Image (tube, rainbow, N blue to C red; front, side):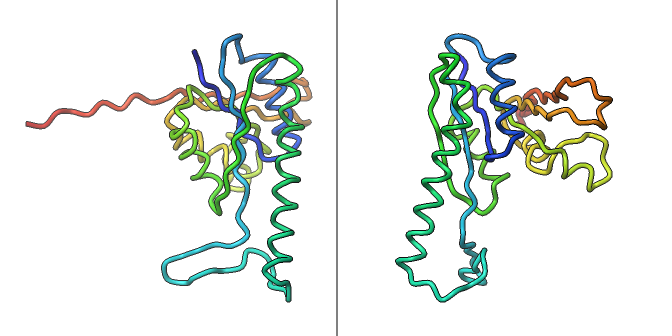
Length: 184
């Protein structure tokens, strides 16, 4: 029984990746986890203490908590909307939302912690293009391709630069088998 993760970031590219997974990847019997890493509003560090992620305002702790609760509710609702193709196709799924300031690293950690067989994600394709790469992966998907412990399937919605074929660009990174040489 495969345990497949579909990583979403509330974008149209994520919605496309969920639909692609339903139509092209998932099989009956697969356990599906819709995984979202929500950015935290405050970063903590050993040397610098709390740093506001958003501009400071004269909000009280109670009003800040209310804003965070409303954002969490919005996020949960949006992730549920993104998972609708899974529900409509009869695939059982669970939604897993975590918070972290480093979404890329947290995503890889959660993939490993959940014991996923593979993870599917959408890509905007911005990160690699800014670096001059022709891989057309975004920074998060590029990071996951290189750091996740399981196969990563990156689905990038086709655009005009892809020749206008209307077909998605799919990149698959198989899990690398690491063999440890016994030293004696």
